[in-house]
Length: 448
Image 1 (tube, rainbow, N blue to C red):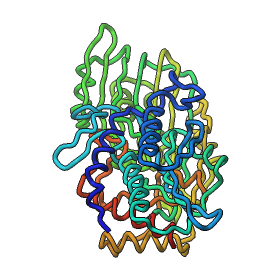
Image 2: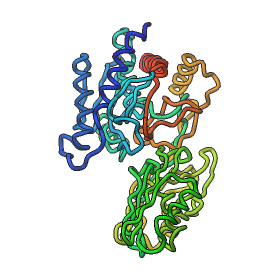
Image 3: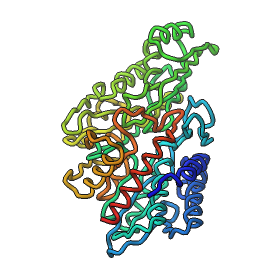
Image 4: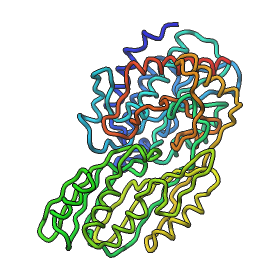
C-alpha cells in the first residue's frame, strides 16, 4: 500500500483551502450561505473537488456536506468529521494569514492545523480507501461542517437530517484519543458602570486568548506613568497622550481558550495597567475577576478528578462611554454545573448582568469500546508511540454534538499549541505520518 503518491496533492489542497478566508460573516449570510460568503467559498470548493474526483456528495443546506463510500451492512456508518470554518486571524502574523504559503517544510495559514489540514488528510484517506478497493462492511463518510468555531449548530443540523453514526472521530484533539472533554460554556456580560475608560477594545473571539487590546482613558495619570508600569510589569505595549486622554495599547499572546496557560491575555493586562495607573473601580473589579485562569478571582476555582481544573478566559471586552459588554469562555469538569457557576459569577460581577448563552456539558467515553481499541492500536502501530495514554481535554469538538464520537489526533503530548495562534502552521513531514494513521484507521473502522 503506497501513501507517497498522495503527498503532493495533499500539500497543494491544504494550501488552496487555506487561501479561502472561511470566517463567519453575518453581513453576507443568506439561506443558501447560512454562515456567510467566506465559509461558503470553502464549502463550494470541497464539494466541487469531491464531485470532480468522482465521489457521491450529500449536501445539508449549506450547514455541512458529506462525502461517502457505501458499505455492505445496512444502517452502520462511520463518520470522520472536520470543519471548514476558522477563527479570525487576529494580529501578530509574519505574513498573510490566508496565503497558504509553503516554506521551510511548513504550510502556513489560518486553519492549517485547525482544521483544514486534518480535513484534507481525511478526504485523501477516503480517496485512498477507494483507490485500494478495500472491501467495506460499513458506509464511511468524510463530513465537513461550517460553524464549529461558533455554535456547532451546523453539525447538529447534519445529525438531525442524517442521524447519528455508529461511530465517529474528529481529527481535532490529541493522540491516542480524547477519552473525555470538559464542559464548555459562554457567558455574555453587559451593563453600565462608571469608569474613566472612555473606550476599550480587547480580544478577537470568545474562545481565543486576547492577543491585543487598547483603551482611551481620561483623567489622572499621563502617558509617562503608563509607560513606567508597562516597563515594570515587562508587558509589551505603549502609551501616548491625546489631549486630556491617554491611549494605551497592550500586546499579549494568542492561544486557544481551552489552554489559556499557553497564552497571555492582553485585555487582562490592560485592565491591570489601568487599575494601577488610576483609581478605576471597574478596571480593578474586572482584573480581579479574570486575572487567574483557573477562576479564583471569580470564586470558581474547582479542581475535580478525573478532569482536573476549571479554566476561564475573558475573550472579548468592549467599553464605550460607561457601557460594558464582554464574552467569557469557561471550561469546567464533571461534578459542577453551569447553573452553579453562572450563579457565582453573577454575584461576583454585580451590578453587571451575566447571561449564560450556551452550555456544552462534559463528556466521557467508555474506554473499553472496541472502536477505541482500533484507534489506539492503529496510532501506536504506525507512530511507534506505545506509551501514549488517552487524554481528558478542555477543548470543544464535534464529539459534544455527535453521539459516539471522539477526538483522534492530530496533536501529541508536548506539541507546540498552534490552533488559533498567529503563524499557525503544519509540518509537512508530520502530515505524511498523520495521513497514514488516518487512512489506516478509517479503513479499519469501516472494514472491521
